[in-house]
Amino acid sequence: MIDISIRKETPNDITTIHQINSTAFETDAEADLVDKLRDSGVTIISLVAEVDDKLVGYILFTPMTMDNFDIKIAGLAPMAVLPDYQNKGIGSTLIEKGLEYCAKENYAAVAVLGHPNYYPKFGFVPSTRFDLISEYDVPKEVFMIKELKRDSLSRISGIVKYHEEFSKL
Ligand SMILES: CC(C)(COP(=O)(O)OP(=O)(O)OC[C@H]1O[C@@H](n2cnc3c(N)ncnc32)[C@H](O)[C@@H]1OP(=O)(O)O)[C@@H](O)C(=O)NCCC(=O)NCCS
Image (tube, rainbow, N blue to C red; front, side, top):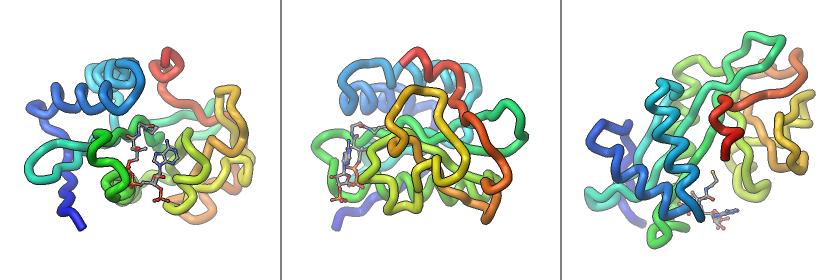
C-alpha cells in the first residue's frame, strides 16, 4: 500500500496541476478548462493527491445547475492521476475525500459523466434512475449521480448542467 495524502490545492500547485491534467488526458483541453474555471471562481473544491511529497493526482468539483430547481448538485470533473501512479487507489481516494467535502458543504448530490464500470463503487447510479439527464448526447449509463442527501432527487426532473465552459471540451 502506498501512502496517499489528499489536500486542497494551493496557488503553488497550479502549474503542476496543469501538467497532471495534460499528461493524463490526450490533449491540454482539460488542463486549460481547469485553469479557466479556477480563474472564474467556478469551483467547490479542488483537491490534489500527494505521494512522497510529489503531486500525482487531481480532482475538481464544480456547481451544476438545473433550469427549474434550486438544488445544490456538484459535478465531479475532471479527475486525473499521472500514468505511473494509476491503479493504486489514488483516484478512489480523491473521489472519497471530494464526496465527503461536498456532503459537508450541504450538497444534495454529486454527478459525473464517466465510465459506468468505475463510479458505481462509490455509490453513483445512472441518472435515469431518477428523472435526470445530461445536457450532452451521451449513452444514458455514463451520466451518473449520487445522492448525498437521502431522497433529494426524488422530486426533481430534467437536465443537470455543468458550467458552460465544459461544453467547449
Ligand atoms: C480515471 C483515473 C483518474 C483513475 O485513477 P486511478 O488512481 O488509476 O484510480 P484507482 O486506482 O482508484 O482505480 C483504478 C480503477 O479504475 C479503473 N479505471 C481506470 N481508468 C478507467 C477508465 N478510463 N475507465 C474505466 N475504468 C478505469 C481501473 O480499471 C481500476 O479498476 P478496479 O479498481 O476495478 O481494478 C486515471 O486512470 C486517469 O487519470 N485517467 C486518465 C484521465 C481520465 O480519463 N479521467 C477520468 C475522466 S474525468
